[in-house]
Length: 420
Image (cartoon, rainbow, N blue to C red; front, side, top):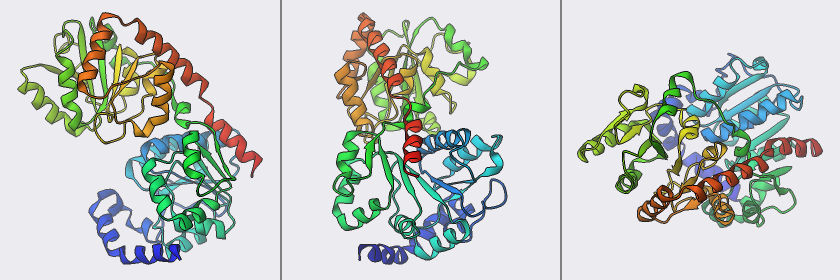
């Protein structure tokens, strides 16, 4: 009954969904993908029937799925063709870039995920008829999973994370949720907390295998044009992936450290926020330099602004201390693991619900620090300036923690082999 109501509600909202797809540029260009008129844009054709179907939504989930697929191809666990689906443009673009020159590129296909509506899914399955389905993290579609179960297609959920909010919504519709999860042959959760939150809906097919994002972590050397930053004669305090409404935290911290000894490197989460950031710095009568301009304009400035995407994960290696953005607002915190690979101390704000278990364990083991507000951040920075040794020792513990927790994707494939 709940599934019928869900389909009825989807039909009622179809005009609004269409308007939404027409409003967004990426979905407007691929409108046929959503309504049953599929085409594959990576190679100009669709995979033959019987492929392995992989689905992810966010950019981070897509990176995990790329690694998972590459592992499956290289070990021979994927014997046929691959179809990848997503719902956002940058994830689709990143997937295509990863496999454009791959040795198995001719076996790999991708498109946008269709509407979770039975007639549309019927057309999709009629064309693809996947032999296995793999989902990354939390993008659960009720009609899709009902149809997978009905077609008796083996389904697996890898790297699953269930937030408290998502758990609440599943609990509000227990009959639908139980049917939703019942179709999975195996569910590989990140933490025991995720298993506990799933226990009301499924008990027999869930186990903890760890966070697959550890498997994506690796140290990478700076590119030739980036190497100049290693010659700076000041310690670099990095504010990684900070949002526009968090900039005030950075300015509060600037007042407690001597600019002659410490350079503040700011990596905005969104590059379009750079203009507002520069305006606020000028209003404070302080100076900044863009990373793309090189060392010449950086020597005496107060802030270095990272004005390029895809650089931050390498830049962490030259930073003395890292503060993670998205944790001083309501976003839920961004990935604190990347600086740990380079043995850099990591501090986060109060809002880290996306990585709550990791932060809790990090505080307990002494390899990560958390503050409640900007005032406490200033206090920690003063402590670091006076005595960095405890923070350096903690960063070494963090590095060992990362090493010990890698291998989730390999373990996932092993479990799939045991339950084909």
